[in-house]
Length: 81
Image (cartoon, rainbow, N blue to C red; front, side):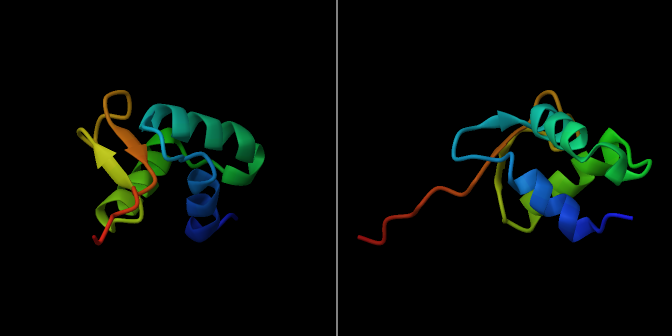
């Protein structure tokens, strides 16, 4: 069975500096993993995206409970100047 850490890494591979819908990230990741995801559904993967967002690994805009409405991206660089 694939671990949460492996799922998170697979999700992160589909998150870029540009905003993307959570549904796109989840769907692409699930297709890539295929049978490895062993019965975990889209809501499980969306929950992993939400975990990454609330722990500030990624940024989000919108309601994390609405895959089709929420967008995520990698954190933007902050200027300290």
